[in-house]
Image (cartoon, rainbow, N blue to C red; front, side, top):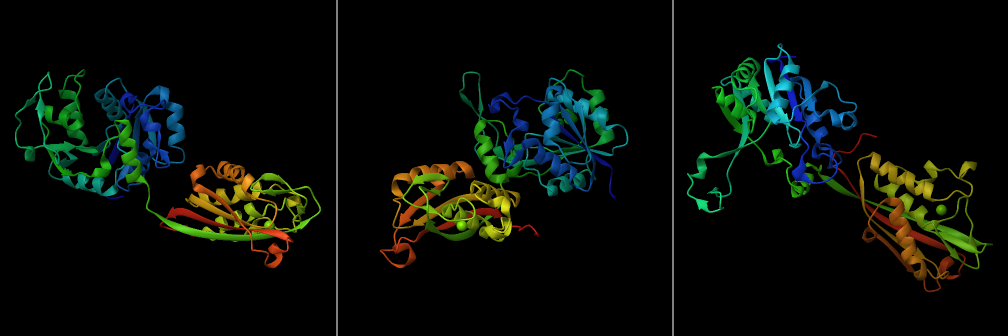
Length: 391
Ligand code: MG
């Protein structure tokens, strides 16, 4: 590896009381993974970074272990009550062989590699560097009563983010100079108090900090990978035979006939299973559950549907909606439609509004019109990552 030896400190010992919720905010799921994991992946995945020291609370050790599972370069140390104490603990853990330390807050999950590159580059001419944004809003100061006071031109103000990078030796001197109990808003303030030269590089909206509950919604939208809609369709028909009920969408519907099939002959869920498999190019129901395999004799079709939904998830897909059409003269579908929707929504983990069940006849035409059986047609929309898995 070329370049100066860089070690990252990820500050994550806080309890995040302003964000609400039972789980500390840095461990709450955002866009599919614990917030802290976004930063752990970005830091440990950067080729310039040799180690990542996460400063955590001892009470969160189990949460951290789960959030960091499978990641390399990551180690932990325990933090203090205040952020500055946690930074000291992290720096102690870094040790003497680092040339650059990069200090980042776990509450900023949107870090991108180019920010790290810019910070490291900036340290060629300064002791410290941080990403920052100009003010878009007007800036005002208020007194204790909330009255607006005059303020200088906002053009000279910046909103400073993390990660903040320092030449390790200079930052070590700064920590030695400032009083041990001094508390700073950020590490740039600490460095400035000790006389270090610091510069700013371009920050980004993605680096916003999750502080208040509404921040999570904004961050979620920014972090969600771009998705494309994949459409799938399925069709199935089963012949009527002896019996007293048919099973459609997992609901047992009393009827003067049953449906003949290898499994429970749930044509609706068979069509839906095929539609899901079709959306992700994963073959059809017969490939995954061959009729020649005796283990599927009389099987509940929920098994097939759950498997197809699992395959969608494994490929990073999310089911947006499903739309089913039942085609038969009898039995009447309408009285059972809401139960069929509800059960399908439950099995797929979808809101009811994203599941549609419709019914039609063929006006007496064809095998359906002659009441020889029933058929089902399904359409689905799956939202999948733009980058298709190579499978
Ligand atoms: Mg079938």
